[in-house]
Structure formats: C-alpha cells, structure tokens
Length: 252
Image 1 (tube, helix red, strand yellow):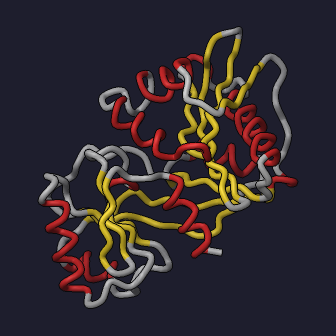
Image 2 (cartoon, rainbow, N blue to C red):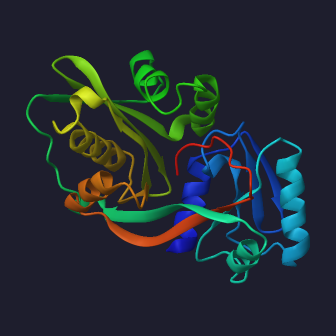
C-alpha cells in the first residue's frame, strides 16, 4: 500500500518543476510547501554521494535549500547519510487512511457545505489570502490549477459566512484530502467535520473507495479530529533539510 499511496500523493500535489534523477523526483515551486520543494526519494537514484550532489545542485540553482522527503521506500542509508552531512530533520508527517464506507457522517446542524469542480473566489480567499499562502497566493493558485479536473474545492459556511476550506483530489479509487483550514473565529463548531463529510460524498460519487491524508505529527488537534473520523496511520515520512539554510516552506 505504501507505494500506491506515495504515487497518489505525489501526483496529487504537482510541483511547478520536476526533474528526474533515477527513481527520485526533484521538485521546485518557488519555496511554497515542503512537498513541492523537496526531492521525492521513494526509489533508487544510484550511488548516494552523486545523487545527493545532483540534488544539492538542483536546489542551489533555484536559491532553495536542498531538501529530501524520506519515507519507508527511500534508500535505507539515505537518512543516516544526510544526518552525517549536517542535514536537519523536520516536518514529521503521518499518512493516514480510511475506507470511505466507514468514514463517519457527522455534519453538525447549522453548517452548510459545497464541493465545487472549479476554483472560486470564496474558496481561494480563505485557502490562500486568509491562510498559510497569504504571502504567495499566485504560486498556490498555480499549484492547485495543475491538479486539474481531479480537484474538488470544499467550502463550509457558518451563519452564512465562509468559514473553512478543504481540497479533495480524486484519482484511481482514492480520495486525497488536502489544505484543511478553518478561520480562527469559526473553530470548534464542526466545520472541519462537515468538510470531511462533504468530501466523502463527493469522492464516492466519483468512484473513490478509500481516503488518505497527510497530517503533521505535532498537530494534536488535527490528529484527534481524524482519529474520531476513523483515520488510522499507514506509515510516516519526514524531511532532511540542508544546514544552515531553512527556506520559508509551508505545509507538509
């Protein structure tokens, strides 16, 4: 299952630039999100020394720190080799899955949800301008635009006002859940639960049977939410990032 999930997650979050290095993929997207600005190493790129050097050159050419995403499919010696070279570990993430048929349907009263096939202004205002991409909205717009027709833009309203967003990516029987965010003034009122319910229905309508998401291990509130809805960990990944540089990357 790990290989399948890695393939789905890689395709669901498309970087602006992708360069092949054997079984690795070197990704760059102007420093926005770790995933889109790191080497995806779920494969074999040959000898580690030359592969690391080529990766470092790729990111240096773009004025970004060299970053490696490491998962159970990465070369076993890579993590230790990077640590020995002074790379710092950061961004530990849990990959969690659930069968959609088992995903709890718990939309609270008073929450209105809608999943749109096209990016609209209300969704983008919350997800980008009022969220973690406020400094780089057009880079984020390009990223979600590359997802194409696989995307579903979920918006929750409370008291008639836009309150929370999520992004679904449906492909090959899987529903990927991304970009979950609730405005501070609307938290703890069930918006996130309602969005998961809306995406469940949307994914099922497109033939998805299972869902996955990526959540940072230090996000206790999100972990508790997903556990209540039946998500369970499949595996984890983390990053190794060159020292002393730390780019302003955002998200898992």
